[in-house]
Length: 388
Image (cartoon, rainbow, N blue to C red):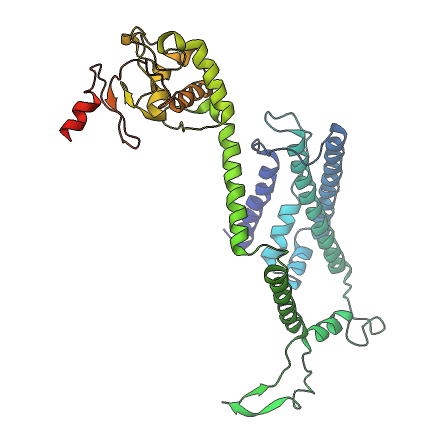
């Protein structure tokens, strides 16, 4: 296989790659809320523009193949410009049959996403068209034999405005002026110049000084801007507000592992209403029960199934069927169970003197695990005090 055959093979592979990018596309993921509405007329206009550009590209590709002939002019252009491969590969890329197809309605692709796909396709086709025009221009000059010579009449007589601007920004000395700023010492033949600082660097330096003065006055003198500690406190307060707002939206996903106690009046009021509706029959109106009530006293420090908001939530949610308490998770939402548990916790120490005797075990807040279930009554306070 000779060099030309290898180059043609590489060019063919590179020519197929852009075509695959135009036809093999997956449906993109959702892009969120569109920045603007995209209608069908705009999509049709982009498709039409892509078709027109594709027609021009195919036409120019034919013209390029005609100008190139059997390869003689192409070789001349390659040698003159970027070499044999540099000419063959662009021609192979640009002579491919570019096709722009109308949207067929891929599932999952919205009009907004399709709009940006068509924009990308049109930009790609426009770049191909511009490169093709540049190559056709070069091929035409090679065929005609015209070479561009600089026109003395149109050549700039002096430095351009870009050169003048760079000179002002850098204040770089010319070759003739270097002798005036040359320092009278050298290192191994290397001489040093006493150049001035560039104006742009000086402007930035003066700007930092001015900013320091403005910051000092506004932060530490007139206190218009917050200092670092104040900004930190404000950010932490905003972060806590964001957390509270987020947790407020997650009340229906709370469970026995994530529930926390709250003394929010609205939550306690809801808990009181639900407790009155569902719980007073077994625990009494004030939660302390009576000697004849089914449920235990909820206002003392003794608990049959563990105290604390998490254990109370769990007991309400799953119930204790063997003792007559049903699982309320089928009738109450998690947020409602949380309200009832918080209300029960708020009843601590508020029971009536005629309430039911303590049952279970003494619960100390902070215990890592709930105590074991026990229906036996604990020793009374006097006996506990005597053993201490």
